[in-house]
Image (cartoon, rainbow, N blue to C red):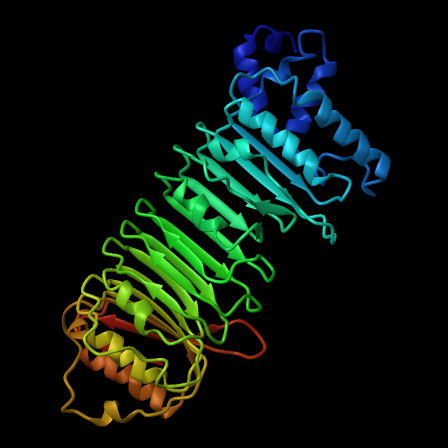
Length: 418
């Protein structure tokens, strides 16, 4: 303890910054020097699950914790709050409380703000203070919980905001999300998770500066779809298993990686991402026509393809993708469906995909059942993939996870098939 006491207050505050706020506060009992030292810590986290020692979360303990925050947060001495995390599940913490605490953080030039409020009650939510939407210091904003309503004033401006996460929130109107995004001229990373009742029909994302976009939509959400215009995007993730929705997606010329899991037809999605280098594609439709995409689309930069198909006509799609991906080096195929419409394998006059002849190095097949058609498909890959270096075949199981079933090893020109 004596050696620690020799350290400067500045260094001690840095040490307290890397421990949970609860631990930092507990040091106040060590001595008079430590009594208020924690109040200079620029990183704060208040969590009613982790910080309340009463495992039953009694009303009295929750009230004491609420009073503690109300008393100490306004007196916090750090001139700049680097990060503030508020995570509450108890209805004892009201949206009005969070509103007040956020306002205090904004007045201290908060840079990272994370709010999670999940009380699971039916009371109406409360909008966050308008000052939040004009915070010049804010770089990261994360909000979660239907009790928090996104309501953006017309004068909103977040000039430094680069990361924005909106998980299961509600919006005051159909235009609230678009208005919020228009306030963020340098936004780079956007994550949106939607649930039923969020007051939004069509999701409109028009952000020229955006580099990462992740969209998760609950099946019960409105059938209206997307308008996406993000020319600087490098990463795109879309998870949407609704039966129907509309969409308008502009081309993404700088896209490097994409993950798409949908029930819808693929055409306009794939047209927008032809510059992608790494693609993870999950196709869940049972209609062979919807599993396809228009002719003329070429993925001239695609090097890594992970294809997960729950479709009986998957062979048609994989052949199209092979033909349209001349630089493909890695193909990882996961199938849950039967082989159908397999005429292309027996047609020797069909041209062989360029990637098989010149670039494919790795081939993985999960969902292998040993049917003659599957063996024919694997043999076709082996016959024509001249640069193949490694291949693995994994068997599917209804009882357990996929396990190693067959391994192919390529040594020079020799194939071993077990």
